[in-house]
Image 1 (cartoon, rainbow, N blue to C red):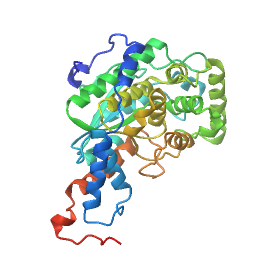
Image 2 (image 1 turned 90 degrees about the vertical axis):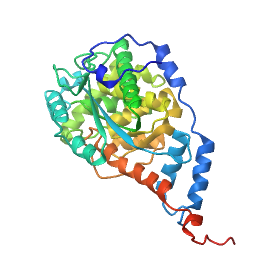
Image 3 (image 1 turned 120 degrees about the vertical axis):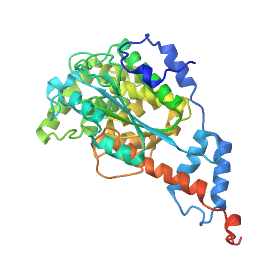
Length: 371
């Protein structure tokens, strides 16, 4: 398959129409982890100058990364955070503390390097990839990947958020952006998002796929009060009753109550797993994309790491369902990929210890005597 470099993705607004068969083909490329590489990595851990298991989850991370990359000595050099931005028609229902105008303003802040994700990515030495997949305003910047599928989603409280064509195109954008990033030699992907109203979409997706009442997983989002949260719950209940998303069909759920940036991130996750690239998911919104991707192919879960746990209650339910233990718990709820990029340091630490520590034989240290 020929790949498109990121430089040539900038400024493209429409692509060919993706089919369900093409999505299924990409899903079929996701393979199990390399058990032999994991076994060799585990044996290597036993030879390092430390008591067995004493580095705890760092050892587990290194072994899983070995299975992902198919080598007993995995490595991470180039890192990227892909941030998808899109607006949501449901904001017209008053579900957010901020107006929709904040979405394009924050995207420009990302591009200027002034947001939290930029500061954290600079510290982690990770490339920041900003994608306009559905911002409801014109945006132009030399570093922006402009792949606007639509001017935001429709109001899910009135009709399906996305058409089937829009959903497939958004997933296609995710595929292409990940492919271009991977072609540059990226070894680790973090995902993030920007879009006023997207916790509402994440709540709807999670409620449908987890078969949970919306009240159990709907939080305060951007800082709404208790009364506003109850209004948000009522809007969500109306949207789910109106659209009747099929919990057995993640694509149906994404189309009826999702959003363009969430669909795009779903595509990123699928394409990364197909290329054996680990993905650090961020909070509730990127977690809902991971939930959808794993519903389409459960093997994708092996390629995911949970950067942190958000204060949004729905995020905890997602992580429990996917059996992902978060690496950090810092009471964050910003989004943008911030928690995922913070956790990059932990994955790198796991590999530094795995690859750089001396073995007992190399250090001339006596191993524990067998009992």
